[in-house]
Amino acid sequence: MLAFVLTTNPIYWLILGVGLVLSLWASSRVKRAFTRWSEVPSRSGFSGAQVARAILQAHGIHDVAVEAVPGQLTDHYDPRSRTLRLSEPVYASNSIAALGVAAHEVGHAIQHAHRYGPLQFRSAWVPVAGLGTGLGEILILIGLGMAAASGSMTLAWIGLILFGATTVFTLVTLPVEFDASKRALATLQQSGVLAADELVGAKKVLDAAALTYVAAAAASLMQLLYWGLQIFGAQSREE
Image 1 (cartoon, rainbow, N blue to C red):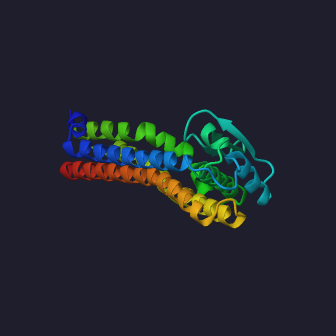
Image 2 (image 1 turned 30 degrees about the vertical axis):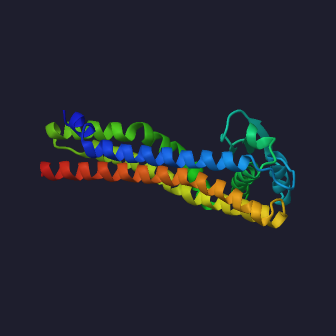
Image 3 (image 1 turned 135 degrees about the vertical axis):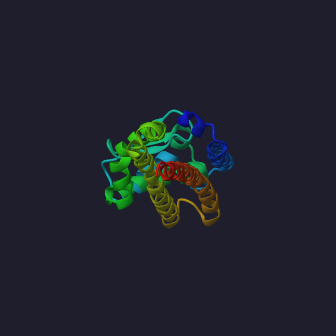
């Protein structure tokens, strides 16, 4: 019964609603920025794949493959297979948006090659965060429901710690993504692939993409705070 009451609490749904609105807003910003600057070809004429390979070679990285993958905004770097996967609109396009996204993903490959601390931590933290995402809230609800009968909040606290692991992952992701974008813009400028006025467009695309990670971290923090207050409140009543 307590679990049902908690999940029907308007504050809980308000927090979820705010998180959803932030996520949708950030996603729309990314799509608008990418669409706008994907229609503007770079004066260099290089494709996203060509720029990615050139940057990798310039940094002495010769063991990372560059592949095309289906979809839009599905670009990512896989450190396990050392593969840079660019979405089809980025891989073959010479647009300002495509070059910005490609360079950003190469930024992650450079981080990996240089053993960038936050990236290493995030990669090692993935299994823990995955466990927290699947079990955190479930254990909190079960723990709070059982507390009325047993008086023990142990299970709820374990659930909160697991959920906190997911929040930590979203927070560590921020410096990883910001640093990759910083490396991308610096490389595009130093190499002359994009002119100063073109860099403005690439920065807008990458800044918009960063908002999705900020929104995810904010939403996770709000949920963590909510559950923490619920557990503290329930424990106070038990005492």
